[in-house]
Amino acid sequence: MTLRLLPLSIRTRLSLWYGGVLLGILLVFSMVGYSVLHFGLIQDLDASLLTVAQVLRDANVSAGGPASEAEVETILRELLGAEFYTKFFRFLDPEGRPAPPPARPGSQPLLLSPHARANAIRGRETFETVRIAGSDEDVRLLTVPIVRDGRVTRIVQVGMSFQRADAALRRYVKALVVLIPLGVALATVGGALIARTALRPVDEMARAARRITAEDLGQRISLRGTGDELDRLAETLNEMLGRLAATFTEMRRFAADAAHELRTPLTALKGGIEVSLRAARSADAYRQVLTSSLEEVERLIRLAEDLLLLSRSAAGPESPRGRVELEPLLLELFDVGVRLAQGTGVSVRLNDVTPATVRGDALALHRAVLNLIENAVKYTPAGGKVELSLATEDGHASLAVQDTGIGIAPEDAGRIFEPFLRLDAARARETGGAGLGLAIARAIVLAHGGTLALRSEPGAGSSFVVRLPLA
Ligand code: ADP
Image 1 (spheres, rainbow, N blue to C red):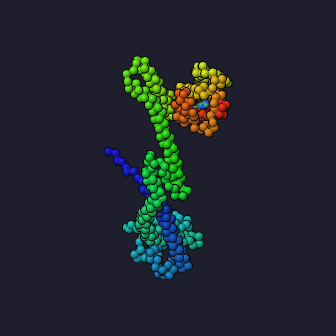
Image 2: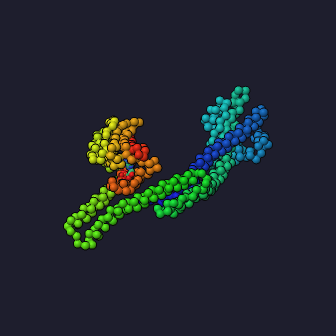
Image 3: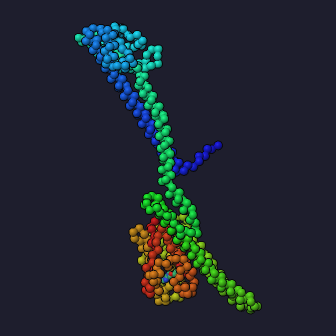
């Protein structure tokens, strides 16, 4: 069985992260604090032990011999007050044997480790932590030699219980055990509240975005005017909505235009058939109706094919992006152009041709340039000429189709590539175009990462330039 974790909201994740990181930091700080406190307490113990040992040594030395226990006790009590009773002390001779004054009644025996003794003989003091036999209590033990005339005459041992230090450390740990979870819990709740406040605009944006459907893309997500990341996100979403709205409008217009284009030949077809059915006709009359119907059907087929080609071209090249030699492609199209221009009085010429290779779909590129040549021949009156050329510059191939035809007004140059656009409907209808030729050519060139530019002067001619990145 696989365990599926519930998807956590950003708010919960942020709060958990916040709490987790804080817990980690507090634990590290507490451990460091514990070590510092522990070290400090030992330092304090050692300082006290040293003072006591000093007092004992001085008492012993100034007494000029073994000080009596009563003497030592009096001095210590005067000096250290009640604290004195938490300490143990004894004198030893250099061999480590207990020396007078003997250990106080009730005081635990202290140990003289070989290490401490060796140090004492060398005149050095030793701090140790030892466990008193028969109890589970740790004692900090200081062993100090008493040197007289350059000789170790006695050894003083002073011990001090760890009880107080342990108690202080235990209080510290107890406080942490309560404070850390409390602090982490408070911080997590606080973090959750902050995250909720910070993310509330995101929820609002999500709700607003959900309300916007394809039918009312005119709606926008309101900005809060703070200029922060969320405002920028809202702006980006609004821009996207704008682009979507424009695309939807374009699609609707395209569908309406397509329907309109389809309706015209279908209406003509229907009219012809209805008229011929109204009365009995001669075989010739039927043939005539059928012939004109066939023309309309052919127009419909051409239109359907063009529409299909346009949508496919916009989706990108079909065949894998192979290498396409533009020179032979242009020579082939030149032949087609010459054939198209036969009987129109238009001369088709080939200008400078530089070999160029691009990546793409040869058939699609052939179709795009053919549309330009067809238009150039179509919209150039008798006596005019159409020139084809191919050049390379800045890593691009430029294929130009130039004519001396009727030209295109500057205000039309921008919309000439829109589907179903014909500048002069009657004239275009005559020539049989549905206004898809340039739209198809542009879609193909764009899908190849290129551009299709128009330079034209009404009455003087037009020049369409296809620019494609070289392979
Ligand atoms: P069509 O099938 O009508 O030729 P296009 O998309 O190829 O459709 O062209 C759209 C319109 O652009 C044409 O109807 C025509 O008015 C204009 N046009 C295209 N090419 C030329 C040209 N070489 N010279 C003048 N006008 C042109």
